Picture 1 (spheres, rainbow, N blue to C red):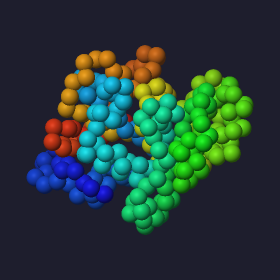
Picture 2: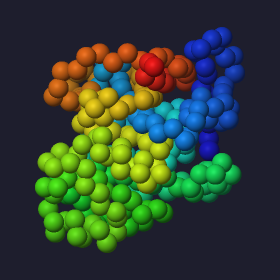
Picture 3: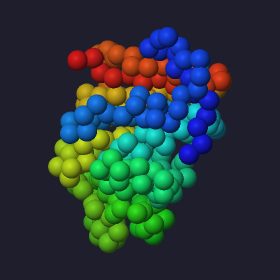
Picture 4: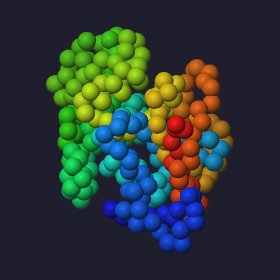
Length: 253
């Protein structure tokens, strides 16, 4: 794994050398894997947009990709909205051989499970994201999703119902934890992350601030129609790579 030049700004003192891979893992790893934890990762422009030309990829860079990969390495399950997976061109969740070896050495399953969230089940059961997955994926849906689509997907994935017309994030988290998938990592999109925040389930979020201005046309990293009270967070660390800031916040206890 190629490591970008990433330096620690906070907590101080600021590092005078790039962080090694093990340093980054120590910063991102959960303190106790036996305790269920919901984590998110997102990237934003300086002026608050989650996308450029409709995609988040244009905001990232080498350092952001390192954190993205490490968060997957450390998770039991990666949760993503089916629309986001489709728009961002997701492939099957396959880790490199060296990462698989690292996970096995740390008593983790070789690969995390991929959980796709889709209320409508507008998913192609022949899509490589499903059929080429190294671990049978999970599809999280609703009672109102089409039965025919459910039957087709059940041949290649575990289809789990978590809500009537809309996926309930509380039921989603409970279903994953019941399967032993305690380290839950979501990569969005904005509606899924907004629902997780509204349900007060988010324990930790990593946010990359990309050094650019988008102009206000793009969405935020989280979207929800409800008006919520401000949720206070604790700043765990801030990293710097070139002009890009990479931060991690956790909920205040």
